[in-house]
Image: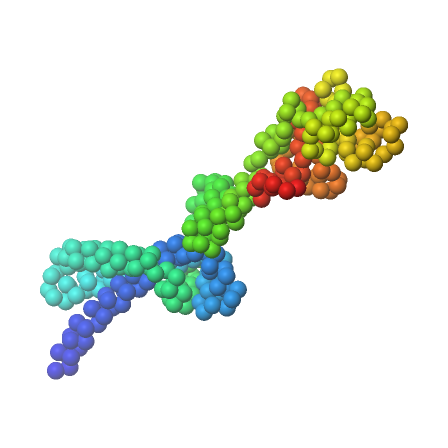
Length: 333
C-alpha cells in the first residue's frame, strides 16, 4: 500500500514540476518581451507618481546587464526543468532508453508554444498591465540568482568574452544615440510626446554632428556694407533691409567688424559708421553648433564670422541660427 501511494505521489509530482517549470518559462520569456515593448517614458512618469511596481521596475532597468542575465538564467533553468520532468515521466512509464527521445518530441513543441510564443504575444499586447504586476517575481529571481552565484558567474563570463573581443565599449557608445532615438520614437508613437517635442528631441540627439558650415549664411548671400561706408549710404542700406546688424567688409572680402545699426542711428551725424563697429568672434567652419552657441553666450555676442580651413571668412552665423537647430524655425526674434 505504501509503495503504491509512493508511486502515485511520484507520478503526481513530475507533472506538477513540469507545469510549474513551463509557467516559469512563460513568465520569464513574457517579461523579456514585455520590458522591451514597455513605454519607458510612461514608466518614468509612473515611478515619479508612485505607481505600484513602477519604482521596482525602474530599479531593475537601471542595471540592464543584471536584468538580462536574470531573464536568461530563469528562462533556461525553467526549460531544462520542464524537459527533465517530461523525461522522468516517460522513464516511470517504462520508456527505457527511448525516454530522452520521447521527452524531446513532446517537450519541444509544448515549450515552444506555451513557454515562448503564447506568453510573448500576450505580454507584447498587455505589457503595461502584466509587467507591473509580475515585476516582484523578477526581483525575487534577481535576489536568488545573485545569492547563489549564478548571475555573477554569467556576468563574469560575458565581460570576459567582451573583453577578448575588444568591442564592448565601442558597441555601448554606438548604441546610446540609437537607444535614445528609439525612446523618442516610442514616446511620439504612444502619444506621450507631441510632434513638436519629438522633433526637438531628434534635433538635440543629432546636434553634435551639426557644424557651423551646415548652418552659416555664405558671404555672397550676406547683407553687408564696405568698411568706408558713409552714414548716409548706410541709412539707405538699412532702409532696404530688416537686419539690426551688418558686417563691414574690406576690399579683400574679409569682415572688418560688425555694425549695430541702432548705434549709428542714435549717434552723432558727423561720426563715421566704422567707428561704431565691434570686432566679431571668428570661429572655424568645423566647430560644432553647441560649442559655437556656448562661445557666443559666454562672450555676449549675437553674431560670429565663420572661417574656412584657409582662414578666409566664408560666412556669417547668428545666435538665432544656432538656436533654431534645436527648437526649429523661429519667426519672431
